Image (cartoon, rainbow, N blue to C red; front, side):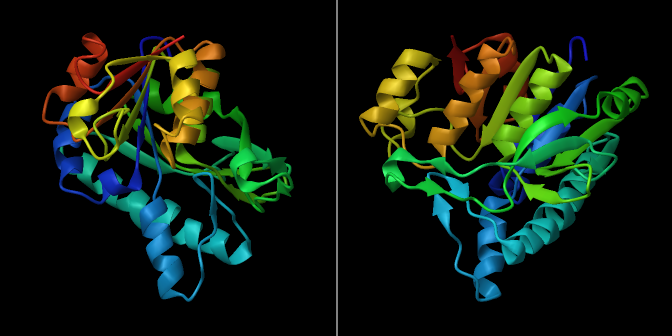
Length: 268
C-alpha cells in the first residue's frame, strides 16, 4: 500500500453532516482504506431493544445479543450510509466487514485485567483482536481505483464474528498494509488537556506525556484506548498517527502535510 493512508471514522462522524465535507476530501485521495465504527448508534439501538450496554474502560462487553446489534448497526446502516456519502462525492467505495473473505481476521480476546475496573480479569465476550488482514483483497481494490470501507467487525476461520474497537481495526490494518499514515477522525478536535475546552488542543503528543495524562486523569474514557492502540501501531512501524475532528474542507490534507496544524500528531 505504498503511499496510501488508513483513516478511521467514528460513528458520530458518519452520522453527522460533517461526513459530506470529509467525503469531498476523501474523493481526492488516490489510495485510502477507511475503517468506521458506530458505538453511539449501537448503544442507542441496545437501549431501544431493552439491553443495558456494558462499557469497561471505553470498550464494549459483547455478548451474543450485543454482537447482533453491532452487525445490524456497523456492518449495516453505518457502512451503507458512509458508502452512499462517498458515492455522492465522486469516490468509488466498496463496503466490507471482517467476514468478507476475512478482510479482517481476528481471534477472541482473552480475559484481561483492567486496572481502573478492579483486580479481576474482565471477559469482554465476543470481542476480538486483529490477527491479519486480507492484503490481496484490499490491494486488488486499491489498484483498481476502489476505496475499501471496512466495518469494525472481525472474523476467524470458523466464521465466528467479533466486535472490535474501530481504532484497533484501523491500527491493525495500517500496520499490516504498511500505511504511510493513520488518521483517526472523531468528534473532538484532537487530544485535549481539558475535555471541556476545545482550545486546549495538544498539537504534538509523545508516548511518555500521553501515559502521564492517562495516569493523572487528564485523558479519560474513549481517548484512553485510542491512544494506547495508536502508540502500539507506531511501535509496530506506522510512521505517523493523527487524531483529528470537526474538519473543514481541506483540513484532512493540512493535518497530514502540516503535522500539528490540525488535531494532534502522535510522536514516539
